[in-house]
Image (cartoon, rainbow, N blue to C red; front, side, top):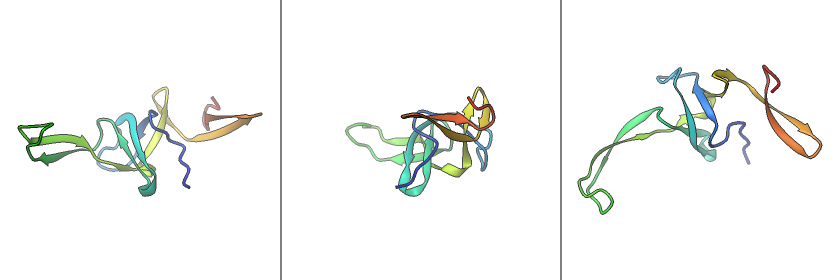
Length: 100
């Protein structure tokens, strides 16, 4: 099983690609493809047929996934690398830069 240091709900910054510099909250992690969905980043237009949920149909904007290597965790507005610190039975995520 793959382990990622970024979890759902974390705030991340895009560090590579067309959306470099964008920030947002992680909505979902797709573990088998090493990808993440970030709120408001990498929006694509999806054409939908009329259905019960959307009787009009039309074009819907939604987030497409980014590779997890293209995002970095944000701490106080600064992108940081992440490590773990074990204190007895608890394991906490810390910044490699500030050790917080």
